[in-house]
Length: 466
Image (tube, rainbow, N blue to C red; front, top):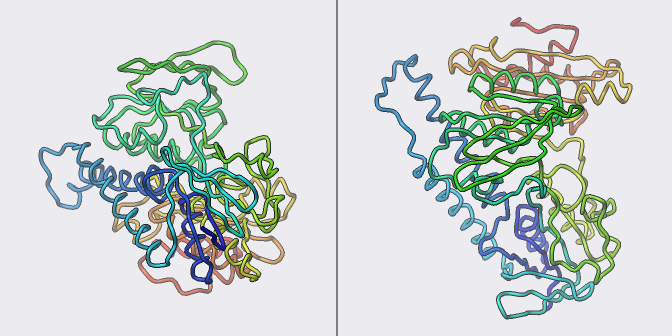
């Protein structure tokens, strides 16, 4: 069957691209190798992890905060199978929502594994059947998969990735997490709140190394209060799993002495890599870089003009919202429009509690670039709203140009940071200043007042409540 566009992969990038293409009048097909739509994000990533994060936060609040609120709870315990069941119900409902959107927009969903025959023709295999799909334009949106080095002996039993960590039915007593990035810390906080002894081994000298250093310090301080142990500047040399446990061997980055730690599980969370297996890109002369990512130009087109690539298979942060924006970009570009993405203004979020969010330049990147800047900070504990909710941890940090006052970066750790960051993104999209942010009337009492106060602090040190 002939289509105007065929999209390989039904994750956030792929299915959003399909919807926008259909809105623009294109005859659209989307191809998915898994039995459900939504990709990693909806099935084994963003959505299920947030469901478990929310459940564990409720448990932790009931255990540690309810009594101070005058709420008495007795015989409190974790029902992990029920948490997993609820998580799956959330996933199922979300997946059904995507299926509905495909029908609503008359998008043909084709299940199977796609591979290139030529630049306009795909072979889609499902079981023993092969179907040819032809399209004027093709979008590769096949996503990513966890990195599991051979020495880590990933078995999906005791040496696991985030996929299996979302399905554990019995609360582990201990877990070693390799990697102090977003995935490891989010899932580590889930189990730490419920009583699992968590040890994080990180190669770099701090956790969430891609975010502002002040956020890293604050988050590590917070997670330590949960009982999480951190071993920084260390590298894992080998992991061995048995039927009931995992043993992790590690050493200092510059050292030789090997240490070992044993736990119920070892979660490998050192990042993800682009997934292009089975596409037979060589059939159309498409190349990948040294990290397996597809090379694209400023319009997200490959070296073959009618074949595009978006999301985790191309350069940039592996974020669902980045993939969505790229999907919309491609649809509109093909339609003759002039879309735009500012990659500097794609926010990053860590859904621990407190949440962590940042956008734009960090203080470290500004220093490295030789930019003259000023900083304003405001602690969450100085807010009446924070005291009322007992969410006192965290801060807002604003970096602005020293001469023009333009906001260059905003970094937040605190309650609802994931939502608060959008004030910064919006203002920065219009190249607003710290003065602009400070002049906007913020409702009281809210967490957002910390953003205003940090902006005031960046503007001639005018913060009001510290």
